[in-house]
Image 1 (cartoon, rainbow, N blue to C red):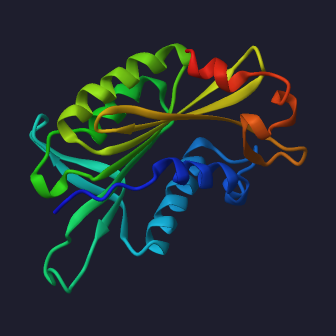
Image 2: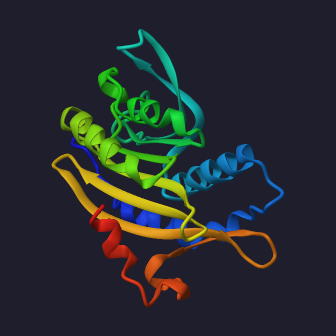
Length: 216
């Protein structure tokens, strides 16, 4: 079937604006952050009418074995096919470990069986610094030239100069990079984490930080 592409940057906007609702505090460990964020996107998929599966799997031809998907959305329509899903609408990976940044991309763009090629992919990856973004984006463009998915990559890293966590989202079409948005993530006065877009975060309103990100 013809691929159905989502407006993934709109998904990112919802992720930013609803982050405080995940109820994550300074008391939670990294595994709980991963779980809450995956659950958020699983619920979103079900609200949109997809079948969502956590810890699903698909065959990786390069590895010669099945590999897990953190989250998948499958399209079902019994009017068209009452025995099989129509497509893998979304594959999402969420990773805390810096050293697994390339592995995360390889999972999202793995060589697999035809019915398991995702129409849309989302990667949420913690990285050591902004210096790695250019390399990772080049890898995505290279791999997506073959897979032809709609892709959103969200990079999160600690900015020691500003003493804040930066959240940088890059949207890709099969033709290449199409849009960038930047946000911050920090704890409020009660110790709960929230996100805000750079242009809406008061301490940044007098600084052209979004344009700085675009020039990286």
